[in-house]
Image (cartoon, rainbow, N blue to C red; front, side):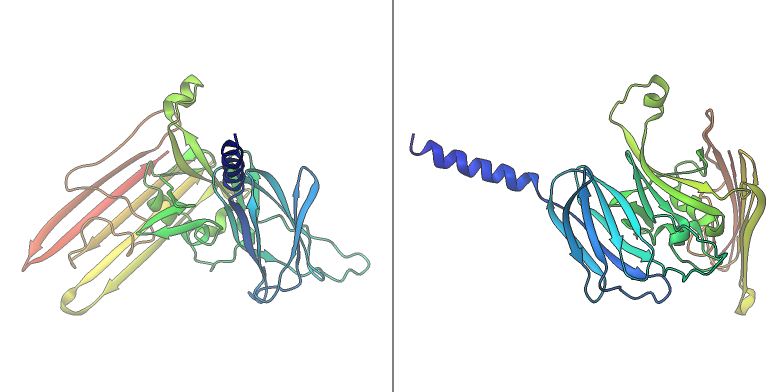
Length: 326
């Protein structure tokens, strides 16, 4: 009996430690100066009750550790800045808010208008939603440039990942864009048309059809466009010419009309560039010589491509074209 009691105590301690191994962290940054903000009062709440508070020091970093799984609210209050409240859900892994940009409050005068700044990150069930305007990018930036500035999203080995899991599908306003080629889809959209980025685990086609979850999910990004931006034409073009008559031409054009999405991609060169190279073009689709790929289903997209190559003095000449329709 004397041996059983200590054993039970050890087991209970281990269980308690195992249940409290998550954390929430982040860095508070001034939107204008891009420097860490010290003196921000960070409050962690659960079920409307205050759990802990933290005051940022130089660099603007904060950390709440040894947390249980559950839903939390992170409030950020800083003298001279707008107030921010960010909901966070911890399920089976810790949550890093990474960079949180805050903006100065404006000294109000009679007749002044107050602009409400939306929280950069919102958690809605199993969907993480990012407010695009909270992340500063260049005017010619792509969706890929924008999304990789968001907390927990990284570019690794040419693949976009969310908290370490590869994003395999991209939709625009709920409609598929470039099928299962997430990287190409993100390179084809300009950041300026994006209102929100939603990251979630999409159920399999069979599960969506039957309504029964089969455990098969795909990490998916849904891009919500700004009002009025789902109608229009946009694209990019690149060209280069060098010695020995070497050249590279490439580009893409996108036609958006309400729920219709048409993207046309092209590449022509004589510098051994085979098919489409995402590092050289703003956007492309992959194909093999004389072949194509496609997928058709209700609400899905189709992508097709062809490449025509020739060779002269060991240098390949390649002309390729690709099409995506959804």
